[in-house]
Amino acid sequence: MFYFLSGYREADGLTALSIAAGKKHKPLTEILASCPEVEVNKASLSGITPLLMVAEVGWPDILDILLQRGAVVDSAPSGKRAEDNKIAGSTPLIGATKYNHPECVKRLLAHHANPNHQNQSGISALMLGAEQGFFECVKLLVQAGADLELAPS
View (cartoon, rainbow, N blue to C red):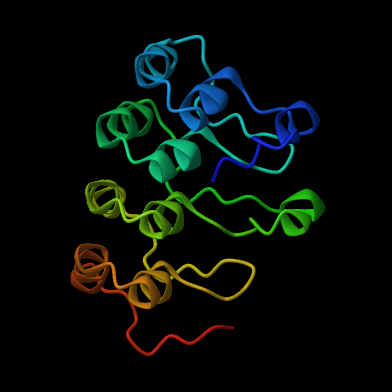
């Protein structure tokens, strides 16, 4: 998370919505997420979307706004920039699990996020949650049908 904090913002084209979320300016993020003029699926050059940023910050109420506005639940950064920054394939579900935000995990799964998606390193949300000991996240992923035998690819 916070991919832009070390000068990355200038080079990556993050939107105002993603920047506000990454800087944890919640009231501003909520206003921007609710603006009909704001494209909720506009990704940075690395593929970072507002939904990914909000999932990693852990704001389920703003996550709901983005999902209601049509945010793509399984969007994931891809391409050389994403690979270079070690974020390729990281869906909002992986991001929410990585930072132990079970309410965000729950809402993403309710919107049919793929619990078996693996990032560029072959890591799924379940593997990440299990490694970190995030009980609630793991419980939700298992209840949603995450493959218990899935190994890094």
